[in-house]
Length: 477
Image (cartoon, rainbow, N blue to C red; front, side):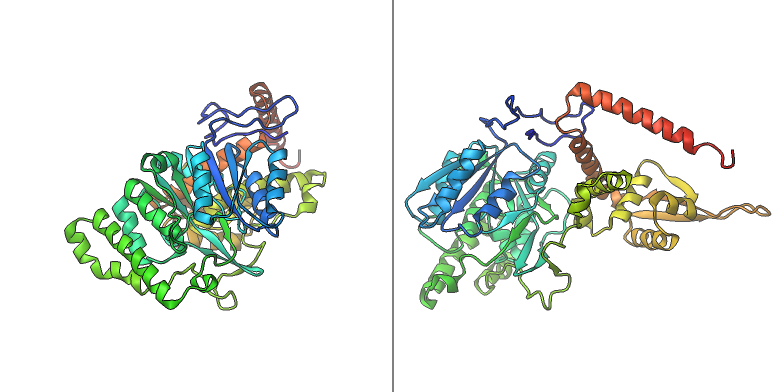
């Protein structure tokens, strides 16, 4: 049974919104006012369209509508769109004469009903947690725009692409300052790694410019940023970008036309900074602004053969053994529990470049300052003492954890202990982990009624007490 839901803090009463509704057969009922409208322009995309749509419909976050805007496709794309619409009430299809991607997106925006707008290109796809992370970030930080990292896919190789490393809400001026450093970067220019507030789009009548066929995404973003106030950079990759769409070479544009178009876009870009910055700040940054004229459009691609950190596609996130998921037995049960928790912890691990073990140590210390021996901590974490030492050293070196050696009393044979306490630098990591554990708890009880949740918690507590009773018995009795 599929149950639509939005993000919560916990199932113990800290609900942000209620669960959505299903009919008696467990089918999803279309929500009249969805939180997110996801827009996909479609043109002759039959080869990869199903992968794109499946990645959207399989999102962990379910409170959305999917607008498939078919721009007069000549292949089977239109039929594929209709096929999905017949199966899932969240899907709405727009069929229109071919008029270009800008008009195709505009048609969908006019019909959108969501609080937020999210864009996906038909030959790309989303990570399963993409919409959940975007919406949660926007709501938790009350943001007008969330901009996210993404994966750059070249053949069977994938690399992580991002730009802003700040972990806080950014003002318009601060965001524009980061954009000024890499003015032609896809990270800022495209639509598909961002979440927009539809109210701003409608209030200022923002639309794609149908008269141009280069940088139209960027010009839309510049106009949107002028009216937005709060921005947040999500440093977890949530989107798979496959190929360089809309390149000048692919469009067969002449050099003369290319120069004219870039000058036109630069005029808009230059006026943007005159509007966002005061006169003194603009004069200080004038040369940086003019870099736009010489910087080529970039998606951050470096060929995987020479790119440090590039991975084989499918290995960019933690692996799950699909066969084991279907197995019975205590070992398989423990595996599923561990992998489910890791699934929700992974955005924090990627964001802060930490291992799951390092996250577990921080989560353990987060509840209170911990004083125990290395042997006991290693046993608790299920890791060797050598592996524990490596994790503690990394956490200490990065300023997340303070480690103090405690000497034993003289004349007594006693295990040396360590005192572990969190440092202020770890606050953001711990917040992400708390979100993750809340999502993990909710996932385990999805589809449960409140009464079933209460009963399940009672059984869990009884199992806990039984386990404690057995393990607290002294050995040898």
